[in-house]
Length: 524
Image (cartoon, rainbow, N blue to C red; front, side, top):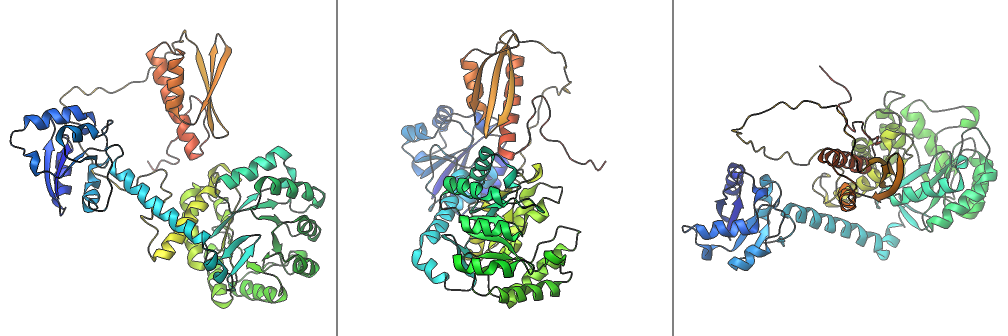
């Protein structure tokens, strides 16, 4: 295929290097502009018309830079040649050229976004088709490794299910409880857990909690997190779908009821009633195998207890899971929150890595609360990473280029640096701390409940509040209402709104006039 690529002067070397690797017959037109994004379709047509050495009759397709704001339809209308947007980064041109016969390019959407969208569509379609295959699910549920929790298939052959814990649930108000449960489901939780308060008997609050959550979540499985037999008994009679947890100290009292109600339970290798916790890998495994035999008659999920870093030993606890998995056939429970809550680092990478480890171990349930700022968003991160690992497992590949990812703060590809030789004075910017009041008023910006809220004040009195999910729609409304009257205030407002949007996406706390990011630790 004969391809004409349009580019700017600064990207020329990158485009030439990348195009040279392609099997396509590529011609390059370097437009009379340093930056490709400055081009417009009309400028491109004018330049092509001025090139007497370029025979457009030889061209099968025209690719313009993906960064151009306007679409390529005008170019096709004027030349009669199919014209499309390429990638936003010239370094990705080789991917587009390699897929040219397979990829349906767009005159409006950059090619790299199309590739990502198609990969994502196929990935989600695969998972959706799997989850809807009733014949396959029925067959898989006959295996000991797979069980039903409520109506949800759980086990080694299914995507790892995310169980989100509402910590200290009895202490929450009705609205707080519902809001927390709905937030977890919206974040991707497959199951929701009511975390009780250790050392207390709050069974009287359980009927109300179970009723409220089930009313609002419908078929989403609900579990109770307690070792207190009385609390567990009340919860089971109220209709919870799973129990966390049974151990050697409480199983005898609860087993008849769980058998009667056919409720699965997470089992622990402990006996908290007499204060016993296994210390070695062998003790964990032997204890849990013994308890599993004692709990015959109900479905169990084995929790070998994932240890935090540098406590007992995370390595030994993972080894215990691996050894148990090769000896016993039942779903495995992976308490990821044990690690993330006790590690001062952003949770996203930790959650993805632990999801991968749990997938290799054959785990079925990924358990987490979101109790600290650094773990906010963990349920969403685990929901995505669970899908990633399921795809990787089924494709027999590493979890890369799957169509979905958890790359938040960096870019997947390094890209090519395009350096501009500036023939202009370079001036060191200096800070100006002078405050100039805008006669049109001032703004208070907040982030709350998944929205950015902007309150306009005039002479210290609020006049109106605007809400939205991104900076652009908010500043357009502010400008449209003439609420800003000087450039300095407009620039400030744009900067603060963008910070608020980034905080909304990342889960960072936003405080107006304070920086959002800084290096946490300087090595020099």
